[in-house]
Length: 448
Image (cartoon, rainbow, N blue to C red; front, side):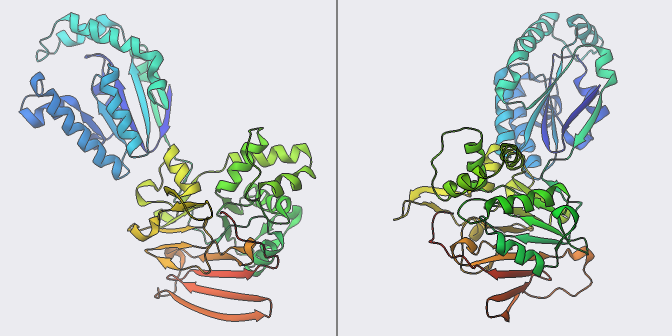
């Protein structure tokens, strides 16, 4: 029996005393990954069987589990966990650190658990305790997913337990093994002419089938908000969808993209902030293409972590503690950023400047909020330079240090003209470059 679980998760073992949880944990997980309630009782009282130390033991267990999850370490909780009250703080802990909770339930025969406890002289409680724990565990089975467990595995016999193989699955946002090089492109918003001009300037060419490829194998990374406002929304979608399918590009979703998904799925959404242009232009396409667009945008991953964790890309940015995690809060931050709950004089949400407080080691490249020009701030850079508002479409050229032979240099900025209508801006950081093309179709500023 194969149990597939996320590489970063909080694994909660559930079962009566004597069902074999500790033996199972020793077999399938590293000793440092397992937090045992018995061991924690010993830590705080010098006696693993001192039930009066249970409250302090679980306080220690929850604290250590939190520290491990904060560091991105899979953690296993080895305790009976048969009561919903015992599991509730563990699910809350998983949510706090944006990891998925996993339940492995040992629904073994009561008599087997009783026999195993009789063979352990340190276990002095009677069979009524096993009976009560088993009853509590079985009453819990139907509610585990409602409690918040994303994965629930139930083992019903010793043979099930013995046959288990555990597979740790990479999170969808984990692309740490991909070292690029990358060309990260800011919010396009339907500006097809500028996108094609920028791709060509970066060295890409449309190959057979219309897929843009780079001769040196570079990959484009689109920061979302492909749609709304611009004059060539379907064309932009076709370019990006083809590149992602051909694995010459990655793409993360923007808030405008997800609003379009809701509209394509028949939800009642307001046709504001450029959505009307997307709907009108897509009406000229086939129903099959509109379905493909909805599926493509809906399947996009909130953010990516590249190059051994050195590079993070997301539409609206990504705090250090959310990088490489998966939760509703992570997805919301990636698409919208963080707001104060207040609005400005134009009725637009006032956003926190998360980058001002960022102290992470990873470089974070994002867009979402148009800026006159990209600027580095605490190893973050916003490259949404408002192409659809008459600004520029910007790309940051990222070269992994592991594959770059040049000497790292301090961030520098210089300008030089290519033509009266085109300029390039380049930053080395330490050997990464921003390239911008001027918009040729200015529009009035509006909400990002």
